[in-house]
Image (cartoon, rainbow, N blue to C red; front, side):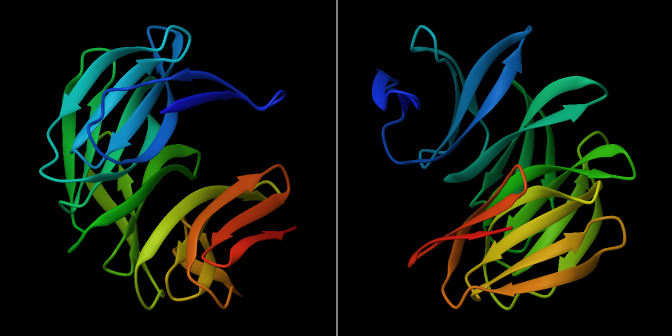
Length: 219
């Protein structure tokens, strides 16, 4: 994992520990301190102090590669969710390093996870190679909804805010990005990208989509 200064473009630190590919990173709060989590092809989640470059913890439990990781709030406590090729989402306490829950429902690999708000409640969304997006309650471990419409792998997703409404965007290998209302479970919009959509991210009022052919930005 490399830490960069986005203003100067200079590399600040190199964090070494994973023996193979790293598939995702996200911020995580531990005891009030801003740290970093990484998702590895070695089946581990690692917690780092980006200021010192030191590895703080190794979270083990997935049976194979981890494709994504994100922060999630449970009962007001900052936790961590990871998406595995073993078809599970796992909830971790980054302070203790302990696994809190295993969320099962996807039939194949899970490519990404992100927090999503439904009726004012912090929930969790996952993107599967089984063509579905699933909504989970990270506190109970229960699956709340299955969003169907993509024709093949869902690669990534992200929360989106439109006119004050908390929505969800999903990027798929079927050449589309879909915008969902996670409360009603309805797809509100399908955006044709004409190329495999690998990633999606909401920035201010812009939706950035990473494609195999480049980057598409939609306002």
